[in-house]
Amino acid sequence: MLNLNKMKPSTYFTILALIINVSLKSQVIHKKGEIIDIRDGKVYQTIMIDSTIWLAENMKFKTTNCHLNPKEINGIALDGYYYSYEETDQVCPNNFRIPTIEEWEKYLDMILGERNVSYNIFTSEDFKNNSRYQVASGYSFTDIDFKFIMNPNPLNFRPSGWVQGNKFKLIKEGLTFWLRNGQKIDSTWHTHAYNHKLINHSHDHHIKDKPRKTRKFVVRCVKE
Image 1 (cartoon, one colour):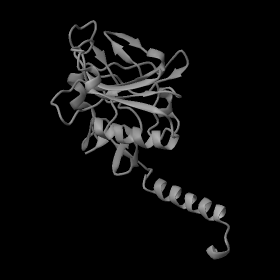
Image 2 (cartoon, rainbow, N blue to C red):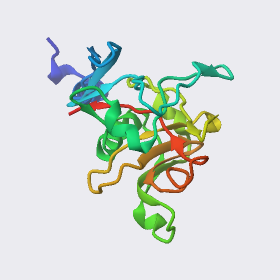
Image 3 (cartoon, rainbow, N blue to C red):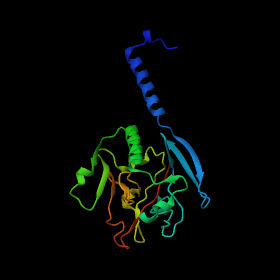
Image 4 (cartoon, helix red, strand yellow):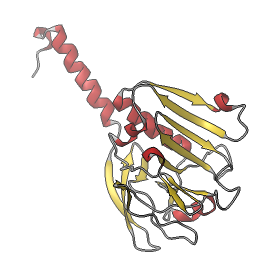
């Protein structure tokens, strides 16, 4: 047993810091599992982070208008099919759904906290004069790029890009997927992460205005 009365102050505070660090990390539960999509029999890996159960991979459920991407482009491994906003409510397995912006931000805050990085947060007020976008929130990073999401990477993210028309676009190996905004009835919300920023927003431009410009993104699901 440790004798605190005989311990040097520096040693005591080092041990105290370690205890606090372990205590904080123990609040984030990384519990892995799997589910079977009864519609087609495909198996998906899951992970519980805090109280949210995420799929640890992108959806591969075949819909009428989904885009089946190649497994890799220019040596970059891809994951999942690409879906238009109209089909997003059909994609997740039973008892799963598209994640909300709040759930995504909670995950980001956890990863940013573990990395102890410098960043700025921006909100809809920063874009109030831009009529093309509705912005919920975003981050700009001063000393890292968006790939912090992939290190550590409990959700097993890979670069995803998007499909526009019938052409695949992998913008600087960026990450994009569909979200829901619990405050608005709008299915075009999504996240973009590339270069030194991440933005959660909604817009019609390049989403649903013209068939040749319609964009399709991957889908990641959470348990209801």
